[in-house]
Image (cartoon, rainbow, N blue to C red):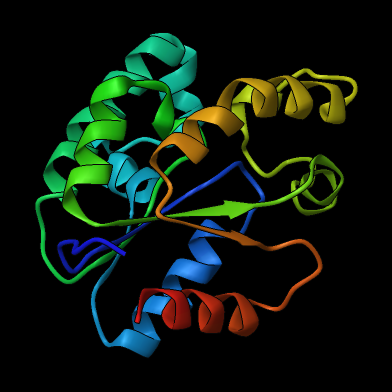
Length: 172
């Protein structure tokens, strides 16, 4: 594999385990963990659904772009991105240029199980059948995840430790 800066960026759909895997991976590697959604909330002082409500998805994506641009320049970190972070070409570029991009792949069925009602997912608000919306998002985003992924790890039905172990083995 090609040489990369010493960062690991986790991409994938909501419910793929990016935050949980990221925290565990960072702990194992003894490096800082960052979550782009949590950083957006920290910087704005409001939660993601509030931003979507007031600024729409485009306003949120602009904030996400700014956060990713700054976090991707850090060194020796694990970064969990939001599921739609790959939508902007500049996000895909900054991630692929500044670290290992790991696509945490999961099925729509697994997403439905993991993404419970009330979990503050703006793109699922008011959706009667989340599986339909999750499939639509996957059709658009899966090729984008794949286009920048250095590694792809399936998370369906797997424990966090097993996913982390796979990532570490593949990168080393």
